[in-house]
Image (cartoon, rainbow over all chains, first blue to last red):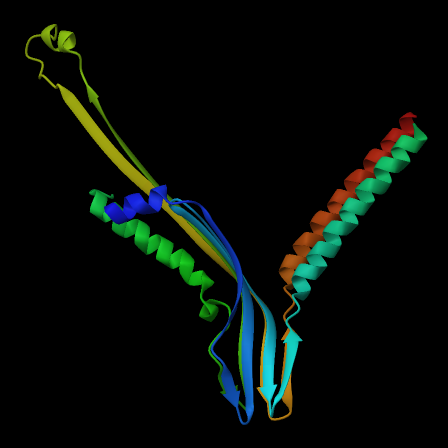
Length: 98
Length: 141
Protein backbone atom coordinates (compact mmCIF):
# COMPACT_ATOMS: atom_id res chain seq x y z
CA UNK A 1 0.00 0.00 0.00
CA UNK A 2 2.88 2.34 0.83
CA UNK A 3 4.40 1.47 -2.56
CA UNK A 4 1.15 2.50 -4.30
CA UNK A 5 1.04 5.80 -2.40
CA UNK A 6 4.69 6.54 -3.22
CA UNK A 7 3.99 5.83 -6.92
CA UNK A 8 1.04 8.21 -6.95
CA UNK A 9 2.83 11.14 -5.31
CA UNK A 10 6.18 10.82 -7.08
CA UNK A 11 7.32 13.52 -9.52
CA UNK A 12 6.59 13.02 -13.21
CA UNK A 13 9.60 11.59 -15.01
CA UNK A 14 10.71 12.01 -18.62
CA UNK A 15 13.68 10.03 -19.88
CA UNK A 16 15.18 9.97 -23.38
CA UNK A 17 18.11 7.64 -23.86
CA UNK A 18 19.85 5.18 -26.19
CA UNK A 19 20.48 1.58 -25.30
CA UNK A 20 22.31 -1.36 -26.84
CA UNK A 21 20.68 -4.74 -27.32
CA UNK A 22 22.39 -8.06 -26.68
CA UNK A 23 25.32 -8.40 -29.14
CA UNK A 24 25.09 -11.08 -31.84
CA UNK A 25 28.29 -12.94 -32.76
CA UNK A 26 28.58 -14.28 -36.30
CA UNK A 27 32.01 -15.72 -37.13
CA UNK A 28 34.47 -12.92 -36.24
CA UNK A 29 31.79 -10.21 -36.40
CA UNK A 30 30.06 -8.64 -33.44
CA UNK A 31 26.77 -6.92 -34.23
CA UNK A 32 25.16 -4.63 -31.66
CA UNK A 33 21.71 -3.21 -32.47
CA UNK A 34 20.94 0.14 -30.85
CA UNK A 35 17.60 1.74 -30.01
CA UNK A 36 16.28 5.01 -28.60
CA UNK A 37 13.75 5.06 -25.77
CA UNK A 38 11.34 7.74 -24.59
CA UNK A 39 9.84 7.06 -21.16
CA UNK A 40 7.21 9.26 -19.57
CA UNK A 41 5.78 8.43 -16.16
CA UNK A 42 3.20 10.59 -14.47
CA UNK A 43 1.81 9.21 -11.23
CA UNK A 44 0.06 5.96 -12.04
CA UNK A 45 0.28 6.49 -15.81
CA UNK A 46 3.18 5.59 -18.05
CA UNK A 47 4.09 5.86 -21.74
CA UNK A 48 7.02 4.21 -23.50
CA UNK A 49 8.15 4.67 -27.12
CA UNK A 50 11.13 2.76 -28.44
CA UNK A 51 12.55 2.72 -31.97
CA UNK A 52 15.58 1.06 -33.54
CA UNK A 53 18.21 3.56 -34.72
CA UNK A 54 21.38 1.81 -35.81
CA UNK A 55 23.46 -1.33 -35.98
CA UNK A 56 27.04 -1.21 -34.77
CA UNK A 57 29.34 -3.71 -36.49
CA UNK A 58 32.67 -4.61 -34.93
CA UNK A 59 34.85 -6.59 -37.32
CA UNK A 60 38.60 -7.13 -36.85
CA UNK A 61 39.32 -3.83 -35.03
CA UNK A 62 37.06 -1.92 -37.43
CA UNK A 63 33.87 -0.36 -36.14
CA UNK A 64 31.14 0.76 -38.51
CA UNK A 65 27.62 1.94 -37.81
CA UNK A 66 24.73 1.39 -40.22
CA UNK A 67 21.61 3.48 -39.57
CA UNK A 68 18.18 1.84 -39.53
CA UNK A 69 15.97 3.99 -41.73
CA UNK A 70 12.23 4.02 -41.04
CA UNK A 71 10.97 4.37 -44.62
CA UNK A 72 7.29 4.29 -43.62
CA UNK A 73 7.73 7.16 -41.13
CA UNK A 74 9.71 9.28 -43.64
CA UNK A 75 7.00 8.77 -46.29
CA UNK A 76 4.29 9.69 -43.78
CA UNK A 77 6.13 12.91 -42.81
CA UNK A 78 6.63 13.75 -46.51
CA UNK A 79 2.91 13.34 -47.20
CA UNK A 80 2.05 15.47 -44.16
CA UNK A 81 4.51 18.16 -45.34
CA UNK A 82 2.85 18.05 -48.77
CA UNK A 83 -0.56 18.75 -47.22
CA UNK A 84 0.85 21.63 -45.12
CA UNK A 85 2.48 23.09 -48.26
CA UNK A 86 -0.77 22.77 -50.20
CA UNK A 87 -2.64 24.52 -47.37
CA UNK A 88 -0.10 27.37 -47.36
CA UNK A 89 -0.28 27.80 -51.14
CA UNK A 90 -4.10 27.77 -51.06
CA UNK A 91 -4.14 30.33 -48.25
CA UNK A 92 -1.72 32.65 -50.09
CA UNK A 93 -3.58 32.30 -53.40
CA UNK A 94 -6.94 33.04 -51.76
CA UNK A 95 -5.55 36.14 -50.01
CA UNK A 96 -3.99 37.41 -53.25
CA UNK A 97 -7.26 36.87 -55.13
CA UNK A 98 -9.19 38.78 -52.45
CA UNK B 1 -13.50 -5.99 -9.38
CA UNK B 2 -10.58 -4.61 -7.44
CA UNK B 3 -11.16 -4.71 -3.74
CA UNK B 4 -8.49 -3.90 -1.23
CA UNK B 5 -5.67 -1.37 -1.47
CA UNK B 6 -3.21 -4.27 -1.58
CA UNK B 7 -4.93 -5.64 -4.70
CA UNK B 8 -4.91 -2.16 -6.25
CA UNK B 9 -1.21 -1.81 -5.50
CA UNK B 10 -0.48 -5.21 -7.06
CA UNK B 11 -2.57 -4.41 -10.15
CA UNK B 12 -0.84 -1.03 -10.57
CA UNK B 13 2.66 -2.51 -10.20
CA UNK B 14 1.82 -5.30 -12.64
CA UNK B 15 0.40 -2.88 -15.23
CA UNK B 16 3.31 -0.43 -14.97
CA UNK B 17 5.75 -3.34 -15.26
CA UNK B 18 4.02 -4.43 -18.47
CA UNK B 19 4.19 -0.90 -19.90
CA UNK B 20 7.84 -0.50 -18.89
CA UNK B 21 8.69 -3.86 -20.52
CA UNK B 22 8.33 -2.02 -23.83
CA UNK B 23 11.48 -0.08 -22.89
CA UNK B 24 13.55 -3.28 -22.89
CA UNK B 25 15.73 -3.80 -25.95
CA UNK B 26 14.21 -7.27 -26.48
CA UNK B 27 10.91 -5.56 -27.26
CA UNK B 28 12.44 -3.89 -30.33
CA UNK B 29 14.94 -6.46 -31.59
CA UNK B 30 13.85 -10.06 -32.04
CA UNK B 31 15.95 -13.06 -31.10
CA UNK B 32 18.38 -13.93 -33.93
CA UNK B 33 17.15 -16.62 -36.33
CA UNK B 34 19.64 -18.61 -38.39
CA UNK B 35 18.69 -19.88 -41.83
CA UNK B 36 20.73 -20.72 -44.94
CA UNK B 37 23.92 -19.14 -43.66
CA UNK B 38 22.20 -15.92 -42.65
CA UNK B 39 21.38 -14.66 -39.17
CA UNK B 40 18.26 -12.51 -39.25
CA UNK B 41 17.03 -10.04 -36.63
CA UNK B 42 13.84 -8.03 -37.03
CA UNK B 43 13.71 -4.46 -35.72
CA UNK B 44 10.36 -2.95 -34.75
CA UNK B 45 9.08 0.30 -33.32
CA UNK B 46 7.22 -0.29 -30.05
CA UNK B 47 4.80 2.03 -28.27
CA UNK B 48 3.06 1.23 -24.98
CA UNK B 49 1.00 3.23 -22.56
CA UNK B 50 -1.31 2.76 -19.65
CA UNK B 51 -2.88 4.41 -16.68
CA UNK B 52 -4.55 3.55 -13.43
CA UNK B 53 -6.69 5.50 -11.04
CA UNK B 54 -8.67 4.94 -7.90
CA UNK B 55 -10.62 6.90 -5.38
CA UNK B 56 -12.81 6.57 -2.35
CA UNK B 57 -15.05 8.53 -0.12
CA UNK B 58 -17.39 8.39 2.82
CA UNK B 59 -20.47 10.30 3.85
CA UNK B 60 -21.84 10.84 7.31
CA UNK B 61 -25.55 11.60 7.58
CA UNK B 62 -26.45 14.47 9.90
CA UNK B 63 -28.04 13.44 13.20
CA UNK B 64 -31.24 15.34 12.38
CA UNK B 65 -31.82 13.14 9.38
CA UNK B 66 -31.49 10.06 11.55
CA UNK B 67 -33.98 11.27 14.18
CA UNK B 68 -36.61 12.25 11.60
CA UNK B 69 -36.40 8.99 9.66
CA UNK B 70 -39.68 7.17 9.00
CA UNK B 71 -40.59 4.35 11.32
CA UNK B 72 -39.06 1.06 10.43
CA UNK B 73 -36.29 2.62 8.37
CA UNK B 74 -32.78 1.40 9.10
CA UNK B 75 -30.37 3.91 10.59
CA UNK B 76 -27.31 4.38 8.48
CA UNK B 77 -24.96 6.87 10.08
CA UNK B 78 -22.12 6.55 7.61
CA UNK B 79 -21.47 5.04 4.22
CA UNK B 80 -18.21 4.59 2.42
CA UNK B 81 -17.11 3.41 -0.97
CA UNK B 82 -14.09 3.18 -3.14
CA UNK B 83 -13.21 1.95 -6.58
CA UNK B 84 -10.53 1.92 -9.18
CA UNK B 85 -9.87 1.23 -12.80
CA UNK B 86 -7.20 1.27 -15.39
CA UNK B 87 -6.32 0.52 -18.95
CA UNK B 88 -3.48 0.33 -21.37
CA UNK B 89 -2.33 -0.77 -24.75
CA UNK B 90 0.71 -1.39 -26.87
CA UNK B 91 1.55 -1.29 -30.55
CA UNK B 92 4.42 -2.63 -32.60
CA UNK B 93 5.41 -1.98 -36.21
CA UNK B 94 8.25 -3.68 -38.11
CA UNK B 95 10.82 -1.15 -39.32
CA UNK B 96 13.68 -3.18 -40.77
CA UNK B 97 15.27 -6.59 -41.10
CA UNK B 98 18.94 -6.96 -40.16
CA UNK B 99 20.61 -9.73 -42.12
CA UNK B 100 24.05 -10.91 -41.02
CA UNK B 101 26.15 -13.25 -43.16
CA UNK B 102 29.81 -13.95 -43.84
CA UNK B 103 29.65 -11.25 -46.58
CA UNK B 104 28.61 -8.57 -44.11
CA UNK B 105 25.60 -6.94 -42.52
CA UNK B 106 22.68 -5.51 -44.48
CA UNK B 107 19.72 -3.54 -43.16
CA UNK B 108 16.62 -3.90 -45.32
CA UNK B 109 13.74 -1.50 -44.58
CA UNK B 110 10.20 -2.82 -44.16
CA UNK B 111 7.55 -0.67 -45.86
CA UNK B 112 4.12 -0.69 -44.20
CA UNK B 113 1.97 -0.43 -47.33
CA UNK B 114 -1.34 -0.26 -45.44
CA UNK B 115 -0.19 2.63 -43.26
CA UNK B 116 1.22 4.48 -46.27
CA UNK B 117 -1.96 3.93 -48.30
CA UNK B 118 -4.12 5.28 -45.46
CA UNK B 119 -1.83 8.31 -45.02
CA UNK B 120 -1.86 8.88 -48.78
CA UNK B 121 -5.65 8.74 -48.99
CA UNK B 122 -5.95 11.17 -46.06
CA UNK B 123 -3.38 13.54 -47.59
CA UNK B 124 -5.00 13.57 -51.03
CA UNK B 125 -8.42 13.99 -49.41
CA UNK B 126 -7.17 17.06 -47.53
CA UNK B 127 -5.63 18.49 -50.71
CA UNK B 128 -8.87 17.86 -52.63
CA UNK B 129 -10.90 19.70 -49.97
CA UNK B 130 -8.47 22.66 -50.15
CA UNK B 131 -8.68 22.73 -53.95
CA UNK B 132 -12.49 22.65 -53.88
CA UNK B 133 -12.58 25.50 -51.33
CA UNK B 134 -10.18 27.55 -53.44
CA UNK B 135 -12.25 26.95 -56.58
CA UNK B 136 -15.48 27.90 -54.79
CA UNK B 137 -13.96 31.13 -53.45
CA UNK B 138 -12.58 32.03 -56.89
CA UNK B 139 -16.04 31.46 -58.48
CA UNK B 140 -17.69 33.69 -55.85
CA UNK B 141 -15.04 36.41 -56.17
